[in-house]
Length: 198
Image (tube, rainbow, N blue to C red):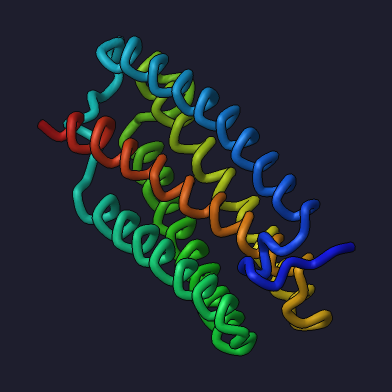
């Protein structure tokens, strides 16, 4: 395996560069998944039947907390990658851990929010609106849950093996995934929550 020391560690081998390219292609498929969910949401958002509307169930406080947690986690994963590029493994693992804790807190607030919706009569079978709302939010939440486990396994590998081209590549690809989830959340915040509260 030929290592190019003029490039950042995550790009330092041909295999690593191809893995990053492959992950960008995978993210393209993820964009299509969420685009389909958003299109379905916009089609069904007014179909509330006898169930509650968005304005009746959306609460600004949990949404703002979720947004703050996820956007802060995007910043900390960026700091983790910066520390990795400087060869500071301990700092990298610290920021990685903070990112995962913020993601876990986000999930906790989202679960609370889901329980609130169900308590207010907005379940999966209440209406087409609540069905697509919970499906869209749940799909994003499932991606965050997957990210938590993935990030934890990467931290364990970095702790065991140190910063190598392989562990740096995995960490960088994870950061792309995490930033992607944050971008999706900005769309959810803007076009589902804010629009629904108006």
